[in-house]
Length: 251
Image (cartoon, rainbow, N blue to C red; front, side):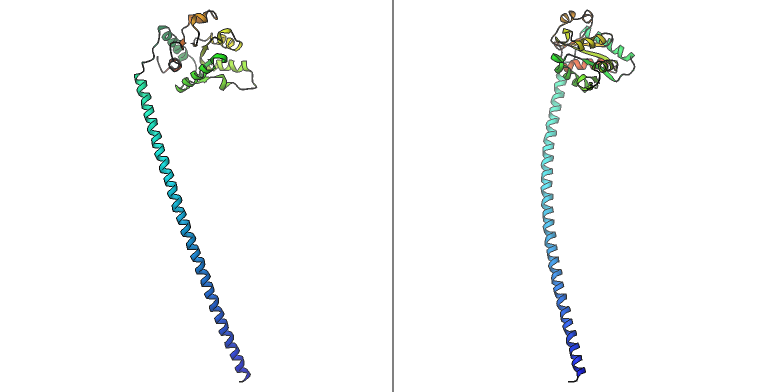
């Protein structure tokens, strides 16, 4: 065999080996790609299954929430209907002649005033009037009456006297919750009442005291009508005050 024949044989063998290597590489690549595709398919199937399960769990929770909300709404509707039936059967708020005169006087005075920031300034003694005053404020605000109330309006670090004087000037009317502690002449209540007495819109609310008790505190107040928790609930008193200070309403 000639040298050229040997060279050609070697070249052929090299090409054959190269083709074999390429074919082997292609087979291995195909196996790797197939394996990766199988793994991707398996992963996607797992994710899809998890998603279906998550959606099913979420839908069950939503259904449970909706059922609970429906029950709650039904209970609330039933409660409101019961309250409406109670309100319909409850006797209308009644006025004494003195209370009606007070309401009319306050209405006329408020109607003649310029618009103020608050409808009423609420004056009370904290020792025995705080709870009633807070309850009265809540009931007034439910009826759209804006209330200057020291627990909310007073700002620490500023003159208490100045803030109270400003509150009195910014209100159309004054509501004085007269209690035993109020009538002892405590400094702040005495100061507030002194300013309120100059208003034709002073509305006394008596709590656990009578006008006879008040007569010993002031010679002016007994000549005024007022509302008393002895005869009316706080809710009804708030309604009477609202009807007096919201001049679009009438008692």
